[in-house]
Amino acid sequence: MRRHVLLLISLGCLVSLGCHAARPEPAERFTIEDGRFVLRRGQESRPFTPWGFNYDRTVVDGRDMLLEDVMRERPAIVNEDFAAMRRLGGNTVRIFISTSEVLASPDRVNDEGLQRLDRVLDMAGANGLKVILVGLATIRPASIPEWMQNASDEQMEAAELLFWRTVARACRRRSEIFTYDLQNEPVVHWSNSDNWIVGCFDMPDGQRFCYVHQHYRQIESKWTRHVQAKYGTVEALRQHWPDFPRTGETWDRIAVPAFDGKDPRFAEYAAWNRGVFAAWAQRLADAIRVEDDTHLITVGALDPAPLAEAVDFYCYHLYPPAAGPGEDYLAKCRQDWEQRLSKVPADKPLVIEEFYPMWKPAGVPTADVLETMLDVTRDRCAGWISFYWGAADRLTWVATENRRLYEEWQEAWSAHAPK
Image (tube, rainbow, N blue to C red; front, top):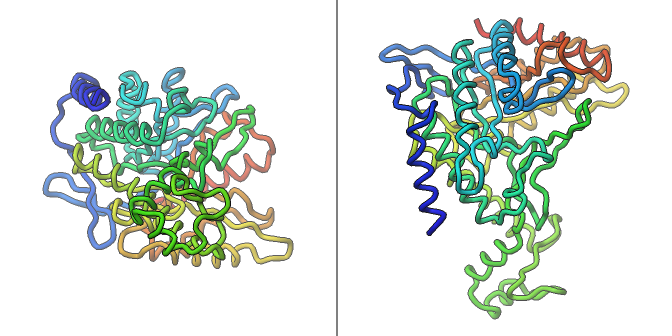
Protein backbone atom coordinates (compact mmCIF):
# COMPACT_ATOMS: atom_id res chain seq x y z
CA MET A 1 0.00 0.00 0.00
CA ARG A 2 2.81 2.41 0.89
CA ARG A 3 4.42 1.89 -2.52
CA HIS A 4 1.16 2.73 -4.32
CA VAL A 5 0.70 5.90 -2.26
CA LEU A 6 4.26 7.02 -3.00
CA LEU A 7 3.77 6.24 -6.67
CA LEU A 8 0.65 8.41 -6.84
CA ILE A 9 2.40 11.22 -5.00
CA SER A 10 5.37 11.02 -7.36
CA LEU A 11 3.17 11.10 -10.43
CA GLY A 12 1.09 13.92 -9.04
CA CYS A 13 4.20 16.03 -8.52
CA LEU A 14 5.19 15.80 -12.17
CA VAL A 15 2.97 18.67 -13.23
CA SER A 16 5.38 21.15 -11.61
CA LEU A 17 8.44 20.18 -13.69
CA GLY A 18 9.85 21.37 -17.01
CA CYS A 19 9.03 18.92 -19.78
CA HIS A 20 5.73 18.01 -18.18
CA ALA A 21 4.48 21.56 -17.64
CA ALA A 22 1.15 22.32 -19.28
CA ARG A 23 1.52 22.37 -23.06
CA PRO A 24 -0.87 22.26 -25.99
CA GLU A 25 -1.34 18.96 -27.77
CA PRO A 26 1.68 17.99 -29.90
CA ALA A 27 2.01 20.17 -32.95
CA GLU A 28 3.02 17.04 -34.83
CA ARG A 29 2.36 13.36 -34.33
CA PHE A 30 3.14 10.11 -36.11
CA THR A 31 0.70 7.57 -37.47
CA ILE A 32 1.14 4.39 -39.47
CA GLU A 33 -0.63 4.09 -42.80
CA ASP A 34 -0.17 1.30 -45.35
CA GLY A 35 2.90 0.04 -43.53
CA ARG A 36 4.70 3.39 -43.55
CA PHE A 37 5.09 6.27 -41.12
CA VAL A 38 3.19 9.50 -41.65
CA LEU A 39 3.93 12.77 -39.88
CA ARG A 40 0.73 14.73 -39.29
CA ARG A 41 0.48 18.40 -38.50
CA GLY A 42 -3.11 19.56 -38.18
CA GLN A 43 -4.86 18.59 -41.42
CA GLU A 44 -1.57 18.24 -43.28
CA SER A 45 0.49 15.07 -43.54
CA ARG A 46 3.62 13.82 -45.22
CA PRO A 47 5.52 10.52 -45.37
CA PHE A 48 8.32 10.11 -42.84
CA THR A 49 11.24 7.73 -43.21
CA PRO A 50 13.26 7.46 -39.96
CA TRP A 51 16.91 7.83 -40.92
CA GLY A 52 19.46 8.70 -38.33
CA PHE A 53 21.72 7.67 -35.52
CA ASN A 54 21.96 5.81 -32.26
CA TYR A 55 23.54 8.07 -29.66
CA ASP A 56 24.36 5.52 -26.98
CA ARG A 57 27.61 7.22 -25.97
CA THR A 58 30.11 9.85 -27.03
CA VAL A 59 33.69 10.73 -26.16
CA VAL A 60 34.74 13.95 -24.43
CA ASP A 61 38.38 14.61 -23.52
CA GLY A 62 39.24 10.96 -24.07
CA ARG A 63 36.47 9.67 -21.80
CA ASP A 64 33.51 7.58 -22.97
CA MET A 65 30.37 9.23 -21.65
CA LEU A 66 26.71 8.34 -21.56
CA LEU A 67 24.06 10.91 -22.36
CA GLU A 68 23.44 11.76 -18.71
CA ASP A 69 27.18 12.32 -18.14
CA VAL A 70 27.40 14.81 -20.98
CA MET A 71 24.20 16.59 -19.96
CA ARG A 72 25.58 17.08 -16.45
CA GLU A 73 29.07 18.18 -17.47
CA ARG A 74 29.12 19.45 -21.07
CA PRO A 75 25.57 19.81 -22.42
CA ALA A 76 26.76 21.94 -25.34
CA ILE A 77 28.41 18.79 -26.74
CA VAL A 78 25.00 17.14 -27.13
CA ASN A 79 23.74 20.10 -29.12
CA GLU A 80 26.88 19.99 -31.30
CA ASP A 81 26.41 16.28 -31.95
CA PHE A 82 22.72 16.71 -32.81
CA ALA A 83 23.62 19.48 -35.25
CA ALA A 84 26.23 17.20 -36.85
CA MET A 85 23.68 14.40 -37.21
CA ARG A 86 21.35 16.79 -39.01
CA ARG A 87 24.12 17.92 -41.36
CA LEU A 88 24.75 14.27 -42.19
CA GLY A 89 21.16 13.96 -43.32
CA GLY A 90 19.66 12.49 -40.17
CA ASN A 91 16.08 13.19 -39.14
CA THR A 92 16.00 10.84 -36.13
CA VAL A 93 18.17 10.25 -33.07
CA ARG A 94 17.87 7.27 -30.73
CA ILE A 95 18.75 8.23 -27.16
CA PHE A 96 19.15 5.98 -24.12
CA ILE A 97 17.68 7.10 -20.78
CA SER A 98 19.09 5.32 -17.74
CA THR A 99 16.70 3.96 -15.15
CA SER A 100 18.41 6.08 -12.49
CA GLU A 101 17.95 9.24 -14.59
CA VAL A 102 14.21 8.94 -14.00
CA LEU A 103 14.09 7.09 -10.67
CA ALA A 104 16.01 7.99 -7.53
CA SER A 105 14.67 4.83 -5.86
CA PRO A 106 12.08 2.15 -6.67
CA ASP A 107 9.27 4.55 -5.75
CA ARG A 108 10.75 8.05 -6.06
CA VAL A 109 11.22 10.14 -9.20
CA ASN A 110 14.53 11.86 -9.98
CA ASP A 111 13.42 15.39 -10.84
CA GLU A 112 16.87 16.52 -12.00
CA GLY A 113 17.05 13.67 -14.50
CA LEU A 114 13.66 14.63 -15.92
CA GLN A 115 14.84 18.19 -16.35
CA ARG A 116 17.89 16.94 -18.26
CA LEU A 117 15.60 14.89 -20.49
CA ASP A 118 13.57 18.01 -21.14
CA ARG A 119 16.69 19.83 -22.31
CA VAL A 120 17.71 16.95 -24.57
CA LEU A 121 14.32 17.02 -26.27
CA ASP A 122 14.60 20.77 -26.72
CA MET A 123 18.00 20.31 -28.39
CA ALA A 124 16.69 17.58 -30.67
CA GLY A 125 13.77 19.72 -31.74
CA ALA A 126 15.97 22.74 -32.34
CA ASN A 127 18.12 20.63 -34.67
CA GLY A 128 15.21 19.11 -36.59
CA LEU A 129 15.54 15.63 -35.11
CA LYS A 130 12.76 13.30 -34.00
CA VAL A 131 13.56 11.11 -31.00
CA ILE A 132 13.45 7.38 -30.38
CA LEU A 133 13.42 7.44 -26.59
CA VAL A 134 14.86 4.21 -25.18
CA GLY A 135 14.05 3.66 -21.52
CA LEU A 136 15.28 1.53 -18.65
CA ALA A 137 18.89 1.65 -19.80
CA THR A 138 21.65 0.18 -17.63
CA ILE A 139 24.45 0.42 -20.17
CA ARG A 140 27.26 0.97 -17.66
CA PRO A 141 27.20 -1.81 -15.03
CA ALA A 142 29.41 0.20 -12.68
CA SER A 143 26.69 2.84 -12.44
CA ILE A 144 23.79 0.56 -11.50
CA PRO A 145 22.46 2.08 -8.25
CA GLU A 146 22.42 0.05 -5.07
CA TRP A 147 18.64 0.03 -4.90
CA MET A 148 18.52 -1.76 -8.26
CA GLN A 149 21.22 -4.24 -7.31
CA ASN A 150 19.21 -5.22 -4.22
CA ALA A 151 15.74 -5.12 -5.78
CA SER A 152 13.52 -8.17 -6.02
CA ASP A 153 11.77 -9.01 -9.27
CA GLU A 154 8.52 -7.62 -7.87
CA GLN A 155 10.19 -4.35 -6.86
CA MET A 156 11.68 -4.00 -10.34
CA GLU A 157 8.31 -4.60 -11.97
CA ALA A 158 6.86 -1.73 -9.93
CA ALA A 159 9.89 0.49 -10.59
CA GLU A 160 9.75 -0.10 -14.35
CA LEU A 161 6.07 0.81 -14.40
CA LEU A 162 6.82 4.00 -12.48
CA PHE A 163 9.63 4.81 -14.94
CA TRP A 164 7.45 4.58 -18.01
CA ARG A 165 4.39 6.21 -16.46
CA THR A 166 6.61 9.09 -15.44
CA VAL A 167 8.25 9.48 -18.84
CA ALA A 168 4.98 9.12 -20.75
CA ARG A 169 3.20 11.67 -18.61
CA ALA A 170 6.18 14.00 -18.79
CA CYS A 171 6.50 13.88 -22.56
CA ARG A 172 3.03 13.13 -23.87
CA ARG A 173 2.77 16.55 -25.48
CA ARG A 174 6.27 16.64 -26.92
CA SER A 175 6.20 16.63 -30.71
CA GLU A 176 9.90 15.73 -30.75
CA ILE A 177 9.08 12.14 -29.78
CA PHE A 178 8.88 9.72 -32.69
CA THR A 179 8.46 6.64 -30.52
CA TYR A 180 8.99 5.23 -27.06
CA ASP A 181 11.33 2.21 -27.11
CA LEU A 182 10.66 0.13 -24.00
CA GLN A 183 14.25 -1.05 -23.59
CA ASN A 184 17.30 -1.96 -25.62
CA GLU A 185 17.56 -5.69 -26.30
CA PRO A 186 15.56 -7.00 -23.33
CA VAL A 187 15.53 -10.73 -22.56
CA VAL A 188 14.20 -12.92 -19.75
CA HIS A 189 16.65 -15.06 -17.78
CA TRP A 190 16.42 -18.80 -18.39
CA SER A 191 17.51 -19.61 -14.82
CA ASN A 192 18.39 -17.65 -11.68
CA SER A 193 21.21 -15.15 -12.11
CA ASP A 194 22.67 -12.06 -10.50
CA ASN A 195 23.28 -10.47 -13.90
CA TRP A 196 21.46 -7.33 -14.94
CA ILE A 197 23.03 -6.95 -18.35
CA VAL A 198 25.32 -8.76 -20.79
CA GLY A 199 26.53 -8.13 -24.34
CA CYS A 200 29.46 -6.04 -23.15
CA PHE A 201 32.27 -4.06 -24.74
CA ASP A 202 35.39 -2.66 -23.11
CA MET A 203 35.83 0.95 -24.17
CA PRO A 204 39.29 2.45 -24.92
CA ASP A 205 39.23 4.34 -21.61
CA GLY A 206 38.67 1.09 -19.68
CA GLN A 207 34.96 1.42 -18.95
CA ARG A 208 32.67 -1.52 -19.63
CA PHE A 209 29.44 -0.82 -21.50
CA CYS A 210 26.74 -3.48 -21.95
CA TYR A 211 23.59 -3.58 -24.04
CA VAL A 212 21.50 -6.75 -23.51
CA HIS A 213 19.16 -6.15 -20.57
CA GLN A 214 18.08 -9.18 -18.54
CA HIS A 215 14.92 -9.59 -16.47
CA TYR A 216 13.65 -11.75 -13.61
CA ARG A 217 16.79 -12.69 -11.76
CA GLN A 218 14.65 -14.96 -9.54
CA ILE A 219 12.96 -16.62 -12.51
CA GLU A 220 12.96 -20.07 -10.89
CA SER A 221 10.61 -18.90 -8.13
CA LYS A 222 8.28 -17.46 -10.74
CA TRP A 223 8.34 -20.79 -12.61
CA THR A 224 7.55 -22.68 -9.43
CA ARG A 225 4.54 -20.48 -8.70
CA HIS A 226 3.31 -20.93 -12.26
CA VAL A 227 3.55 -24.73 -12.09
CA GLN A 228 1.83 -24.85 -8.70
CA ALA A 229 -1.01 -22.65 -9.94
CA LYS A 230 -1.42 -24.61 -13.18
CA TYR A 231 -1.37 -28.16 -11.80
CA GLY A 232 -2.58 -27.64 -8.25
CA THR A 233 -1.28 -30.83 -6.62
CA VAL A 234 1.77 -33.07 -6.61
CA GLU A 235 -0.34 -35.92 -7.97
CA ALA A 236 -1.55 -33.90 -10.95
CA LEU A 237 1.98 -32.73 -11.72
CA ARG A 238 3.34 -36.29 -11.52
CA GLN A 239 0.74 -37.38 -14.04
CA HIS A 240 1.80 -34.57 -16.35
CA TRP A 241 5.55 -35.08 -15.86
CA PRO A 242 6.34 -38.75 -15.26
CA ASP A 243 9.91 -37.78 -14.31
CA PHE A 244 8.74 -35.58 -11.42
CA PRO A 245 10.45 -35.13 -9.05
CA ARG A 246 13.91 -34.96 -10.56
CA THR A 247 16.99 -35.13 -8.32
CA GLY A 248 16.81 -32.24 -5.87
CA GLU A 249 13.38 -31.16 -7.11
CA THR A 250 10.40 -30.62 -4.80
CA TRP A 251 6.88 -29.24 -5.11
CA ASP A 252 8.17 -26.01 -3.57
CA ARG A 253 11.16 -25.81 -5.91
CA ILE A 254 10.32 -26.87 -9.44
CA ALA A 255 13.42 -27.51 -11.54
CA VAL A 256 14.15 -25.39 -14.59
CA PRO A 257 15.00 -27.65 -17.55
CA ALA A 258 18.33 -27.42 -19.29
CA PHE A 259 18.51 -25.17 -22.33
CA ASP A 260 18.34 -28.22 -24.52
CA GLY A 261 15.57 -29.15 -26.93
CA LYS A 262 16.01 -32.79 -26.00
CA ASP A 263 14.82 -32.15 -22.45
CA PRO A 264 11.15 -33.28 -22.36
CA ARG A 265 10.22 -30.18 -20.37
CA PHE A 266 12.07 -27.75 -22.67
CA ALA A 267 9.20 -26.79 -24.97
CA GLU A 268 6.78 -26.13 -22.11
CA TYR A 269 9.28 -24.00 -20.22
CA ALA A 270 10.39 -22.11 -23.35
CA ALA A 271 6.77 -21.23 -24.19
CA TRP A 272 6.16 -20.04 -20.64
CA ASN A 273 9.40 -18.01 -20.62
CA ARG A 274 8.37 -16.43 -23.91
CA GLY A 275 5.00 -15.57 -22.37
CA VAL A 276 6.72 -13.89 -19.42
CA PHE A 277 8.61 -11.74 -21.92
CA ALA A 278 5.43 -10.84 -23.80
CA ALA A 279 3.64 -9.96 -20.56
CA TRP A 280 6.54 -7.75 -19.47
CA ALA A 281 6.30 -5.68 -22.66
CA GLN A 282 2.50 -5.55 -22.64
CA ARG A 283 2.39 -4.34 -19.04
CA LEU A 284 4.75 -1.44 -19.80
CA ALA A 285 3.02 -0.56 -23.07
CA ASP A 286 -0.36 -0.47 -21.31
CA ALA A 287 1.06 1.81 -18.62
CA ILE A 288 2.42 4.20 -21.26
CA ARG A 289 -0.87 4.31 -23.16
CA VAL A 290 -2.78 5.27 -20.03
CA GLU A 291 -0.60 8.37 -19.76
CA ASP A 292 0.07 9.00 -23.47
CA ASP A 293 -2.07 7.63 -26.27
CA THR A 294 -0.41 9.89 -28.86
CA HIS A 295 3.06 8.49 -29.39
CA LEU A 296 4.06 5.17 -30.93
CA ILE A 297 5.62 2.31 -28.94
CA THR A 298 8.28 -0.19 -30.00
CA VAL A 299 11.02 -2.37 -28.53
CA GLY A 300 14.58 -2.83 -29.76
CA ALA A 301 14.33 -6.59 -29.29
CA LEU A 302 16.65 -9.41 -30.28
CA ASP A 303 13.49 -11.40 -31.07
CA PRO A 304 10.57 -9.09 -31.93
CA ALA A 305 7.99 -11.87 -32.40
CA PRO A 306 6.94 -12.36 -28.73
CA LEU A 307 6.28 -8.62 -28.40
CA ALA A 308 3.87 -8.33 -31.33
CA GLU A 309 0.83 -7.40 -29.24
CA ALA A 310 2.64 -4.69 -27.28
CA VAL A 311 4.23 -2.66 -30.10
CA ASP A 312 3.03 -0.45 -32.94
CA PHE A 313 5.95 -1.46 -35.15
CA TYR A 314 8.95 -3.76 -34.95
CA CYS A 315 12.58 -2.82 -34.55
CA TYR A 316 15.45 -5.10 -35.47
CA HIS A 317 19.21 -4.87 -34.91
CA LEU A 318 21.27 -6.00 -37.87
CA TYR A 319 25.04 -6.42 -38.14
CA PRO A 320 27.29 -8.18 -40.65
CA PRO A 321 28.07 -11.83 -39.88
CA ALA A 322 31.65 -12.99 -39.49
CA ALA A 323 33.19 -14.29 -42.70
CA GLY A 324 36.18 -16.58 -43.05
CA PRO A 325 39.09 -16.29 -45.47
CA GLY A 326 37.98 -16.72 -49.06
CA GLU A 327 34.26 -16.31 -48.33
CA ASP A 328 32.21 -13.87 -50.37
CA TYR A 329 31.54 -11.37 -47.60
CA LEU A 330 28.69 -9.46 -49.22
CA ALA A 331 26.99 -12.64 -50.40
CA LYS A 332 27.19 -14.06 -46.89
CA CYS A 333 25.77 -10.81 -45.47
CA ARG A 334 22.89 -10.92 -47.92
CA GLN A 335 22.04 -14.52 -47.08
CA ASP A 336 22.28 -13.92 -43.32
CA TRP A 337 20.16 -10.78 -43.37
CA GLU A 338 17.46 -12.29 -45.57
CA GLN A 339 17.23 -15.30 -43.29
CA ARG A 340 17.06 -13.23 -40.12
CA LEU A 341 14.48 -10.78 -41.42
CA SER A 342 12.26 -13.66 -42.55
CA LYS A 343 11.65 -14.43 -38.86
CA VAL A 344 10.24 -10.98 -38.09
CA PRO A 345 6.43 -10.90 -38.32
CA ALA A 346 5.21 -9.13 -41.45
CA ASP A 347 2.02 -7.63 -40.01
CA LYS A 348 3.58 -4.32 -38.90
CA PRO A 349 6.21 -1.88 -40.18
CA LEU A 350 9.84 -2.71 -39.47
CA VAL A 351 12.71 -0.36 -38.69
CA ILE A 352 16.36 -1.42 -38.78
CA GLU A 353 17.14 0.28 -35.50
CA GLU A 354 20.84 -0.56 -35.33
CA PHE A 355 23.25 -1.10 -38.19
CA TYR A 356 26.99 -0.57 -38.47
CA PRO A 357 29.75 -2.55 -40.24
CA MET A 358 31.59 -3.46 -37.06
CA TRP A 359 33.56 -6.06 -39.00
CA LYS A 360 34.32 -6.27 -42.72
CA PRO A 361 37.27 -7.36 -44.89
CA ALA A 362 39.65 -4.55 -45.75
CA GLY A 363 39.04 -4.97 -49.48
CA VAL A 364 35.27 -4.49 -49.33
CA PRO A 365 34.21 -0.86 -49.93
CA THR A 366 32.27 0.58 -47.00
CA ALA A 367 29.61 1.97 -49.32
CA ASP A 368 29.01 -1.51 -50.76
CA VAL A 369 28.10 -2.84 -47.30
CA LEU A 370 25.46 -0.15 -46.90
CA GLU A 371 24.09 -0.61 -50.39
CA THR A 372 23.82 -4.36 -49.87
CA MET A 373 21.96 -3.88 -46.60
CA LEU A 374 19.54 -1.41 -48.17
CA ASP A 375 18.97 -3.69 -51.14
CA VAL A 376 18.07 -6.55 -48.80
CA THR A 377 15.84 -4.52 -46.49
CA ARG A 378 14.27 -1.79 -48.63
CA ASP A 379 11.09 -3.65 -49.57
CA ARG A 380 10.45 -4.73 -45.98
CA CYS A 381 11.63 -1.77 -43.92
CA ALA A 382 10.25 1.69 -43.21
CA GLY A 383 13.34 3.25 -41.59
CA TRP A 384 17.02 2.81 -40.78
CA ILE A 385 19.16 3.97 -37.84
CA SER A 386 22.97 3.71 -37.64
CA PHE A 387 25.40 5.24 -35.08
CA TYR A 388 27.01 8.56 -34.27
CA TRP A 389 29.51 8.82 -31.39
CA GLY A 390 30.77 12.34 -31.99
CA ALA A 391 33.20 14.00 -34.38
CA ALA A 392 35.92 11.58 -35.54
CA ASP A 393 38.74 13.76 -34.19
CA ARG A 394 37.12 13.75 -30.73
CA LEU A 395 36.91 9.99 -30.42
CA THR A 396 39.63 7.75 -29.02
CA TRP A 397 40.72 5.23 -31.65
CA VAL A 398 42.59 2.03 -30.83
CA ALA A 399 43.39 1.53 -34.53
CA THR A 400 43.51 4.05 -37.36
CA GLU A 401 41.45 1.76 -39.60
CA ASN A 402 38.55 2.12 -37.16
CA ARG A 403 38.58 5.87 -37.59
CA ARG A 404 38.79 5.50 -41.37
CA LEU A 405 35.78 3.14 -41.32
CA TYR A 406 33.79 5.59 -39.17
CA GLU A 407 34.50 8.49 -41.52
CA GLU A 408 33.74 6.43 -44.62
CA TRP A 409 30.54 5.19 -43.05
CA GLN A 410 29.35 8.71 -42.25
CA GLU A 411 29.97 9.72 -45.85
CA ALA A 412 28.08 6.74 -47.23
CA TRP A 413 25.23 7.10 -44.73
CA SER A 414 24.84 10.79 -45.53
CA ALA A 415 24.80 10.09 -49.29
CA HIS A 416 21.80 7.75 -48.89
CA ALA A 417 19.77 9.96 -46.55
CA PRO A 418 16.15 10.52 -47.67
CA LYS A 419 15.73 13.82 -49.44
